[in-house]
Length: 472
Image 1: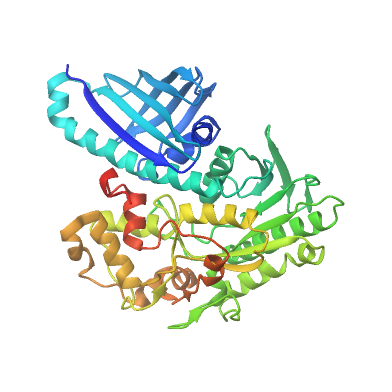
Image 2: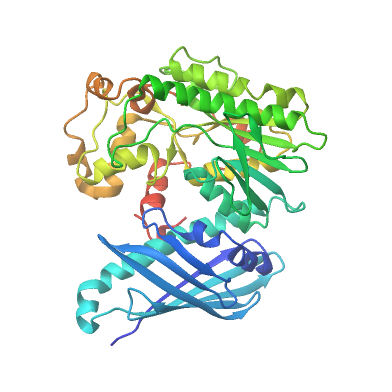
């Protein structure tokens, strides 16, 4: 049975001990797992110095458990992963670390693997497996390098961070990002807290004492979209409208009033907001100084931000991140419309001329970190790529990434705006029909550099449609 080999190298502008620590800290596995091929950790025992991990994955519709053991640990030099049981006949992955100089280092990944079923497996699965590994490492290299560059901008003491919404799309990745940097993160949860968690109760207006914490990141709120089967977003009912408003306003008010009352409060509150604040504004380029729109969701966002006033009055630095639609195949517009595109449907909506601001999930995580460590940043901040696109271009770019030269065929039948409005009601406006073109100058002028400026590059990263050779 022939052994296949894969080798990848990455130079990063950080010392080797920082590169190694990033891999050793909790959260590295979560940061390195691509969203186009997600897996779940069923059980973990120990770390990379001899531990074992059980991973739930899918081979098509078939669920599999991959058990890997870490061994041959040498700090700042290497560790190895070996398959104990799983989809391969054998798999061994060497993670090798080399010092280049005092400010830079190299990561070398070498994998030896054998496919099941011998020659038959190589004939029918060899090229597919190699492509999957290539896509995975293109993703991993991007994450590793950019995370380390971002984290190296902070050289203070490890931070004690608390977070609401920690189980969501952004929160799970943010916690992993902060953990790999050596910070501690405690989720604030509803219901009974588990070990390492804090609690809050919006009905009773109570929460765990946050005195002495360094940072509060507030991401919680009723999702504006819960797709039916991951495909069709549900319209807003009267109850849904109420939950969207009250979950945001009441939660923000509770946190703000609590930390404002403390003798030793957190230094900064980073609060999620949304570019829906501006409403449908046509061709206007929108800075943070613009007024809010006149639709329901604009009203929600205005009240959401206003609820943090007690913290501002107490002298706590508050940052409102007006986040554009977040690009991830695990949620939001890219999940909903990406699933449709995979089935051959990626048409322009309502003519496709409306402006869509957008931002990658990795940039959102990075911007939150930037907001935490940048003391000069406060107030509302637009979080969107500096290159918004019209909806028709968004749809055609998605089709191109998924289908290549056949992508144009997926947009032949446009979707009238009135049809989307009839199906989704107000949510149709928020999802697709409103034209919101925001200016990211405030964020960029504060020193932030976007990971993904261009939509096609973002899609290829998130959907596993590029290789390590065209990583940059």
